[in-house]
Length: 596
Ligand SMILES: Nc1nc2c(c(=O)[nH]1)N[C@H]1C(S)=C(S)[C@@H](COP(=O)(O)O)O[C@H]1N2
Ligand SMILES: [Mo]
Image 1 (cartoon, rainbow, N blue to C red):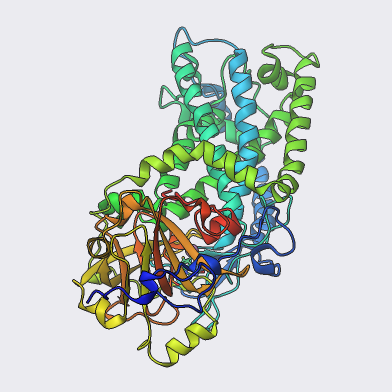
Image 2 (image 1 turned 45 degrees about the vertical axis):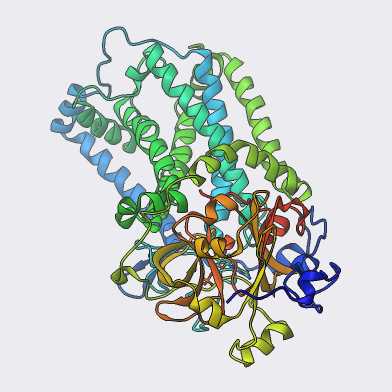
């Protein structure tokens, strides 16, 4: 099984090229080192822009409702609502009801009056962070512009899309499906810029959550929470009354300095105590590491349910922001702005000017964010990693064992992704049914080997039914058959210095040079880390990585190199390729720890 030392082993070939085959020859020379440090026209292999269609939701089997229709429909409903509310207010019964429930639920004794300065600051920071969270979030959505309710991500079963239906081409990839967003909308916006969008999203999320944590502590310490939590069921009649008053265009006279009206109270309560925590929970619901660890939760609360709910939270926040800002300006702008921005309850211009200055800051940051990201993508990656890295690292050490599914969970459709191998080297092997295929395993190991498929198949067989999470957002369950990485490790015996394992592909990446990925040694011993040569009980197909691919279920899909030709054990990956720990890390600013 194990080859005796060959000439190549005794006299290692110079580190020059793949022509000199031999177990000691590294595939490093086939990587490109191009200092890919700006985002320019060559981005992602020069992928041309592709704009989507207006967002639509599915009705019934295959009818789609264009959401732009909601604008005229909403306007008609608004006009009708105003007419109805005006009519209602003529009725004596309704007048009595409004007199009895003018719009404000009573505050508990001791509730604070007015707004402290910290609240103003937190309010500003919250709004500021939201800009980047929402823009980068939409960019992430545009990378797989469909939403589903089951983890299967089956074409035609999406309930929402802003892309055309999936074409019939069986090798159509998720990357082909990704969309461009206008620069000012998306962050960054260019097609398939999800790597950078994620640093923005997850990095700013961390700051937003910290700000939120401080907020929660302070509202409970200072009693401000009493102004945000409904204390009596009469908020319901009060809020109905307020709704009628708003709609009839004869607005309630309330004073937010002391007490919010009940409709406002409910909106704030839902935003602070429901939407914000839900944003975090549904965000974590998409993590491959957590979903693998808590498979029983993930079976129901699947990544796609989480993703759909995460989108619903986005819609809530966007609607909230629009309505909230409109009402602040429509109901005594100067006084309202003084409340939040100047901590005073009068009609001076102080609050307005503070607000105007904060608006300038937000606009400048908004306009600058995308161009700066294109100019300094590595900085964005670095800062993003500094912010979210510690949490990602935590989740990385999570137990992978529970992450198995059963036969009946296997997805009817499993998306393809990545760039297919087109090299002559691969084509020849494929034409010969991989009879000449050899997996070369070398580097910092006691026992470097070359294994053909028969030898791989002779090793202990390992199977797992697991869920795949593509960074772009689709997912699917499949059964993988092959060799556990533990078996490989026992065979090659890594030296103690070996800390990272590099997987090299036959396929080139979109920017040239072969696709590769660096994985931590620790994860190689995980029970769900394997080299697969079978998928759903058949030989691995061309599209899914024939003859051999990696599975590591606590990570995202891009780490699972397909069409593997070599494995190298190294001390650190900074010598390999661009030095960032993988093809996508070098070229598309992904991270090498992506447990979220
Ligand atoms: N060689 C190579 N391997 C690759 C890729 C690639 O582009 N080249 N894409 C990755 C990505 S982004 C994903 S999601 C999975 C997709 O695997 P599948 O096509 O079997 O679904 O393969 C990964 N392995
Ligand atoms: Mo992916």
